[in-house]
Image (cartoon, rainbow, N blue to C red; front, top):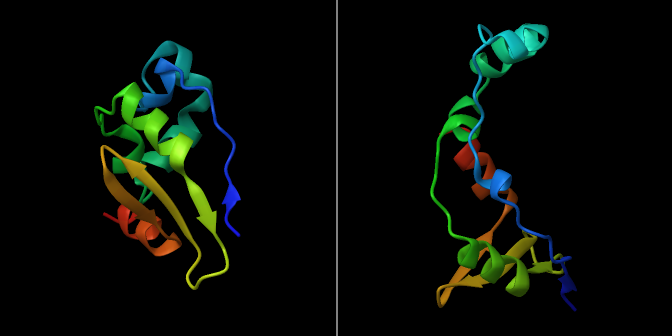
Length: 97
């Protein structure tokens, strides 16, 4: 039986990209960490602005089911009438883009 994921409250700050500029005064204490992230393979993913609507996020989280009984385990959800399947490999592929 599929485990139901908890419904998370959406906030506007959840859909923001990271500003990784060590020259900003408030960011200076984090310069070493920012420089590390700028060199990492996930830099594009955490800095790219991608418009996603509240409705899409709500649809995903209210329909998401985790299926661990199949190989590979998968999260299946429905957004705008389309089935979305997310596996570990898909996440790895996106992060390596």
